[in-house]
Amino acid sequence: QVQLAESGGGLVQAGGSLRLSCAASGRTFSRYAVGWFRQAPGKEREFVAVVSWSGDRTYYGDSVKGRFTVSRDNAKNTVYLQMNSLKPEDTAVYYCAADSNTVVHTKELWYDYWGQGTQVTVSS
Image (cartoon, rainbow, N blue to C red):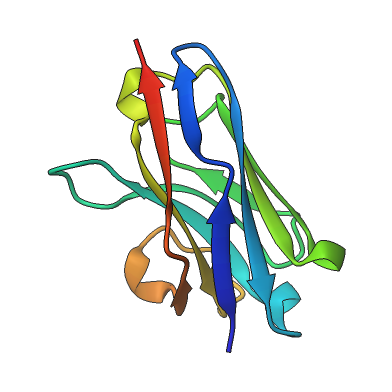
């Protein structure tokens, strides 16, 4: 069992930065890939980024590529999402999720555990 809790969301002006954290409980967290997804009002949940269990593989959605960076510290049971050059269209609730597979996935159905989400609002 893995429990996830996101933090670090808030209100920021366009062009600014935020760093989200995903803190996990459970001794086996280091065996899970962790993905970030987001959902804006009235829209479907969208893949943002994923990092493999070892941290050596990352993958990003096209809309955030070059602006967001995902990383992890398994000693701290935490995954981070550094978000730079934020745009109003990045406004959404951001979720982290854990996937027990060794292959990184971008589809929600592969993820076993989800956090409650943290709101990110980017003003123009």
